[in-house]
Amino acid sequence: MDILALDQVSKSFGALKVADSISFAVPQGQALGIIGPNGAGKSTLFNLVTGNLRPGSGRIDLLGRDVTALPPMARVRMGVGRSFQIPQPFEGLTAFENCLTAAAFGRNLPEAAVEEDCITILRETELLHRANTPAGALSLLDRKRLELARALATGPRLLLLDEIAGGLTEGECKALVETIRAVHARGVTIVWIEHVLHALTSVVERLLVLDFGKVIALGEPAEIMASREVREIYLGLEA
Image 1: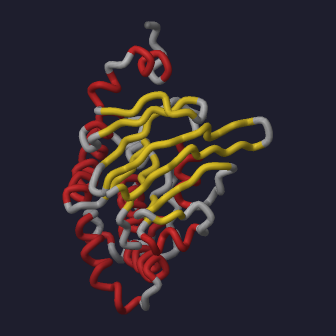
Image 2: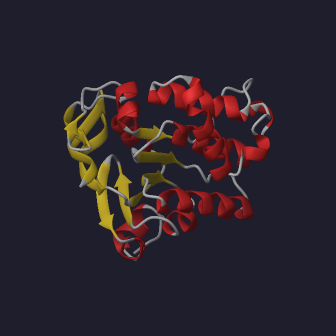
């Protein structure tokens, strides 16, 4: 079953087309990577999937249901979780309180009902030792981990990761990738935008390439990265 499907989705801001007849599907349990140069429309695509933007045309299905007109919170409660490229925690709240807030609002449950889940998630994301630390005092790696933990706290069936490895050292990136791989191994479907290609290709089963809002290529990572067109567009190499 496809957990996410886009059919001819387009979006324009005046004369600027930021999504151009995008069509693809993500089977349940798969990890899909999305790459493309800056300005290719990657974050716009995420905003369309989450409902922060409404397409000008086309259809978006989640779990077989047309969600094109649904608001973001309705999609969260259907199982869409998202991290942001720049972590945006509540800096005055602790890591645990951030996770608890996401879980309670994302699942529409009282805090007492999700406390144990939040402890489990903080352990899974290697943040349990920072549970009582204010988010504003966390290192960049731990802020990235908290961004992942908050997305997981909503109970997603589809997890959208937006350049979560950006800005990390090699060792930090490797540690975070291991956590993401473990999340995927327990059955969470992932769509991941990333510029750190070795991190991305160590997790995903397919790669989708965007350029100027269009899908340029979609396939297995080795096949995509060997493509002459992808090397020209994404890597800036001459054929």
